[in-house]
Every structure is written in structure tokens, then in C-alpha cells.
Image 1: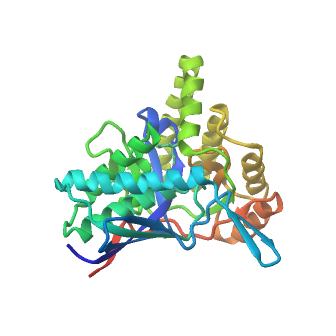
Image 2: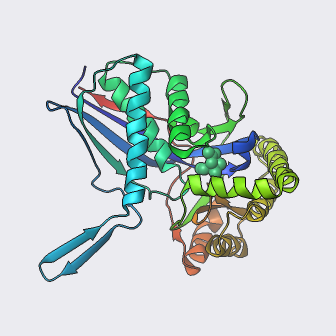
Length: 335
Ligand code: MEV
């Protein structure tokens, strides 16, 4: 066994098909240049220490009173992140058929906000699987990392598509095709030019997926029609992307946003940011990820970028500077 392994994995933006992908429809997803970094170190004592120097966790409050500093963390969110890490260690041990648990220190750093709809938990999961298996001397294939990662997300969230863990593993641009084996396909296309806007999110992915499931229980035929439409427009978007027809791609993004609104996962703030991007000349815009706050993307030619960014900021959104098409999970060092 090695002493220290470091792995990084990218975040992502869903171009088309979130939520519908949980019900077996295709999705189109791109990695971004923002990454998480997971360092796994062996300890002599049989204990597990997980820490982060810069995970921007929503709900972390620092109170300064004279010399006194009081800190309060959203423990629910912190514990949820911890459960991805613990399950990631568990699935690697099961996969390798090992039982003894080494003492470990795991340090997680991220240059993107948690709970932003950018797939941070999947990136942490996948990077932990890659670093920990490397520490144990195993060189897992990407296909295995993606499969184990999906297993972790299902265990922690209850329901999850293979999308977030597949893109964190492979990077680039993927079509997700649930039900196929493997359920994703690498797309050799140029990722479209995007602006990413962000607003803090209230619910977790699991809660938003559950909310859609409850809506479907009340209106099964109607919700299935919405899902089917998202699936169809995603297939169409794939054709438009491959032919480089950005105008049509933008129109399809607008339609996808409206259908996500119909599922009840948008918020006023996200709608404002989407509208602001459109007014500033974006070819199309939609929320990205699970919704309930979080991120939105706007498709816009380079010359309009700063205009669109300013317009999103003007309605209170932040801009996440990132390029699309980042590299997949990578073991950066092992020793
Ligand atoms: C979350 O990034 C995307 C969802 O479709 C959930 C999933 O695919 O597991 C909402």
C-alpha cells in the first residue's frame, strides 16, 4: 500500500436532460475546468480524519465578537458530503475484496461551490475512489470508477442517474443513455460557448429528485409527457450540436428550461437569471443540474460574453468562470 495519493475530478454542467435522465431518457453533459482535489494519506493510527481547507459550504457562519470567534456549520450538508466519502471507501474495499481498514486522512479541496448543481458530490466521490484505490495499489479502469461512483450516489441519494459520476470520470462531453451498457457515450464534438451563472441553492439533489417523483405520483401521465419531451429535445439537441447549429441549440435550451419549470424545479432567481441572459443576447439559457437554485447556463457567442455576464450579475447572480470540456478524473500523484 502507498502512503499518499492525490486525485482530481472535474465538475460539470448538464446541457440537456437533467431529471428526465433519472427516468431513462438521454442527457447531454459537459465537464468544466473547475475541479475538486482529494488527498488520501495513510495514518499509523486506525482512525479516519476527513477535512477541507476551502470547501465553500453553504451555511458556514463565522461570528466575530472581540477576540472570540464562533463558527457554525450546516452539519447536515457536511455529513452528507462525508457520506459520499465513506461510501466511496466502502465500495473500493468491496470491489478489491479487502476487509482491513487502514487509518486515513482525507483532505478535500474544491474550486467550485458545493450544492451548486455543478456535480461537486460526484466529483468528490469519483476522486476519492480514484485516490483511495491507487493508495491500495489498484489501477481501476475508468469504466469501473464510473460504475462504483454511480453505486455510491445511489446509496447516498436513493435515486441517481449515472450522469454526474460518468462525466466526473471521463470529462469532455458525454451523451448519457440509461439502460445501455455502458450507459454513456463519449462525444467527439466541440463544447458550445457557455456562461455559467450561480445562485445559492436551498435543497439537495436528493430532495429535488424526490420532489419530482412526488409530482409524478400525483400526475403520472402528465409528468411522463414532460419527461418524454425533454428526452426528444435532448436527441434533437445532439444533432444540432454535432452540426454546429448554435441558434437551434439555443432554442432547445429555452424549451428545456420551460419544461424544467413545469416540473417545479426552477426558482424565481433562476428564472430571472435565465431571462437576464436572454435579454442580453444569449441564444438560449436554462437552469442546469437539479435546480431549486444552483446554476444556470447561457449559450452565447464570445463577443456577447461580458454583456451576458453583466446582465446575470445585475439580477443578483454570480458568474462561475470556467471553460467547458475539462479532463476526467486523474491520479495526480502517488507515493
Ligand atoms: C443532478 O445533477 C441531475 C439530476 O438529473 C439527478 C441525476 O441525474 O441523478 C437532477
